[in-house]
Image (cartoon, one colour):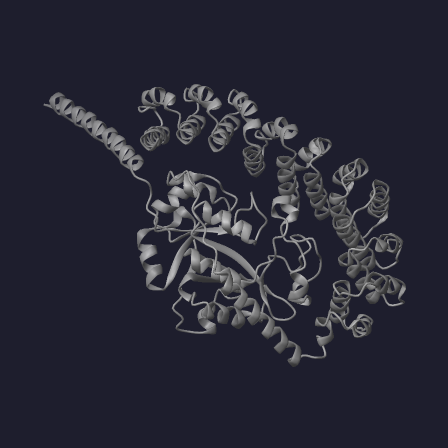
Length: 622
């Protein structure tokens, strides 16, 4: 009786095992046969940071093209009460200007370029107004998370959202995350941050009864599996800065179309802003002079230039520089020797906008000034003049050598910071050598970061090795921005950086490996042969990342090597290779993929079946 009982139990166990395996394959087929639902809101943080300058319309357009259904942006207020999109308290890091947002008039802010620091293709990008961004979101049917960075602007932000009729499309964060205390009864949802593994059906249902939405943070995470988990867990919102993976999850190879707001709407917004500026002026005449906005009253502007009020003096200098007066440069040059530092600073700053060659020599002499702010303004104006007027090679060399001298001698971080970024537009060999030296020897990470940025803009291969050293530097959070700049710079250098970036795929830090992969993806087809070789690397992480990079690049040259990678002893590289073959879409891969339907890894089987379906779908469309 006992023996018979054991036999029956064993058979029952075998039967259960069989049912379990069958269920797994059934789930596998079911998962791959359909893509995840689209109810989740995909929020791109500041746009697409790997490809465009943060908080600009260039970044927003790319995010929408990649499938993002929302944007998270940071908002601050200018001196004249304009609500604009800027992360930092100053514009030094993300524009070609400098100064605090809350001490700057919007008219001045619009003079600065918020895109060229990331590449020539973004030259001319401006810092957006919140009102403009709301209109962009409205016509594209996307959500916004507004991260309010300043106290005291909460009501102004809320009023703009109401005026745009966007209350139901906006989440408030930062200083406005408790908005219901400011105005109870608003028809808005609050955000509750959770990790994907913490989410349950009951928790989501309860959150909704409390008018909360569950958001999962996937910042600095390009893992499509992690995003799929968020979707399957039924999270309401996913915050990410690699929106490229959205279209891939839904097997959409073409970019989404982006709608542009009606130009008339933008003109009306600008007109309204101009009217509000006039109102602010009349309310606060002591702080903002009407004369600032009158370009042809030079004598009045000169008087304002020598005032003790910082904003008035600065705007007067800019107004003189933009006036029709033929002697505007000479007027500003005369004030470079003023006894007051404030006047010298602003006269120097204005000269950069005057686009007159006569300003070069006086500005060079001002680099010896005792006041560091005077030096910084002189450096930035020389940078601007080098871009706006024709200079001889001798003149450029003279400017370069003087700025290098300042960079080497100054103990002030701000002066060194501006000197390093000025050298990006004076890219001769001396500038390159100095920037490399700065990378190696400067004690401040912000200075190192702008030196890396400058080397990337110049794009000379001499910068490859020191940039790679910085890129793989393990110095914690202080070095993170400098390392990002180094990664972007290496991508700009291109072919000469490929081998070093492939080597960085084995770095002991995950973020460095990820950034190296995206730099190689940006370089594109020239990186394919080196990535194919990397599929034979002893480190499984390198093999995995090489396969992923090849999938994003989508070059058929890699197909044969990726098929071999399906035989890898480790599941992660096999999984990545299957996904990459699906993205490339070459029918020659079908036979081998079919043979891997019964791979011992569930995740690999799922990616194999997904790849097969993608290739077959592509065949049908072709």
